[in-house]
Length: 347
Image (cartoon, rainbow, N blue to C red; front, side):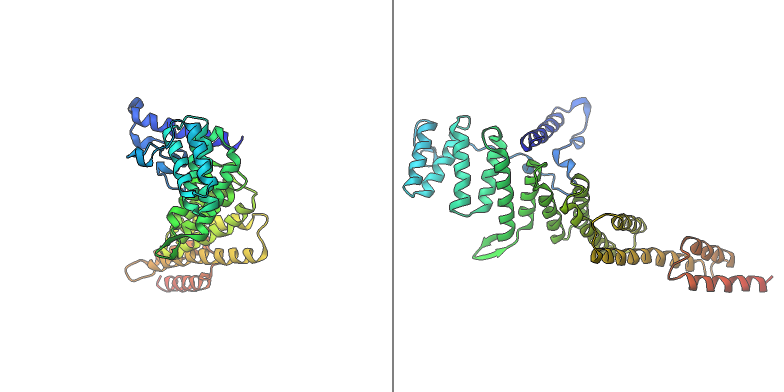
């Protein structure tokens, strides 16, 4: 399936879901609406990521509107402005054409030239991204979709590299940049660069400390693009994030067990190198120790004056049965033997 056809299918899904919710079909609540982003856990669900707002003629058209009476003449005039070096005037002219005559053959030509101006001349990658996205969303059949989708991805990468400028200082706007990569994936899910874009989304979730969402993206990347270099990278990074969650949120048996199961699976994955294997093994040991430590604390809970000797014996026996190789096994066995000896002496 081509990138264009795949994206068209996603838009159909989104449009259909919105129409369903709006009509209240069969009495279904709006919360049941499914958007295309449902296929991408860890992505933002905002509708603006799927659909771009359509350009409309500007207010005070005698100032900001087209200078000519029709689209062909407006395009020619805009090209002449550019040829004369009037870059700003050319940008305004191209944009005015798209707004005033969006259904003409000249509109996608003007939109492409406008996007290229921000990319090549202004090096304003954020605005270039929005203009290329507009071209893909409204003129997908009138442009080289694959080429423009890749340009969209390149713009997202430049946004991440440069950040934004505010009073001559650069800073990383991780939310806008992450959403840019998400928009790329949604518009080109089958592209060769889609796994790399998803990896960027997961990394930016990490940068923001959104560990659960980072795990969701890494997991989805591994499932959708299994066998890619990015999927292999995601294996170890997901393990690191899972361990971060384990350390930051205190003991949670289910989370510990899920992490242990995941790391065991990761260790069986082909392509994991020696250093990564050592890291995974160390993480597995740490996670396992957390489970054993909590189980041992639970066993000791029954070994108190408020509990019977029999309940303590049962607790230690249960612990040793479940964790015979635990670091706490010797201590548990010693205490178990002591309790049994006391029990025999007290008969």
